[in-house]
Image (tube, rainbow, N blue to C red; front, side, top):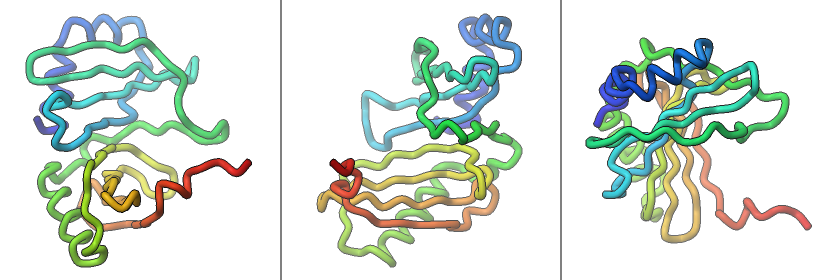
Length: 168
């Protein structure tokens, strides 16, 4: 399912409308998807409420919509959670993935992916982006930030998953 179609499906749902009635100022802050996971065929859509600095996530699949309990936002204290401007999402995910895969094949031909995590979000310094992370068989992560408007690659980084280990 395309992101915009999924959002429209959510917005027409009774559960979401009840949430919005009680959280008038909550806004769409992220969409999350793991590519190729059969049991995760839909999207997780996050709505941020600035008043309490929390996010409510809706899991939207082809046949059901579930709301997850409100939770803390995973971010640095100084970081702002921005609203996504849906009008700036001009390219479908398939086109974005084609660009990401083409870039990976050209620049990182030896990296073979096992999982692909897709996040659409608005990041300070980048604006609205597709944040694509390939987790590879060599225990590396290739992160590619792609503009939602024109598909331009804004930044990329390859690192080992072992680099994420906290210093002792």
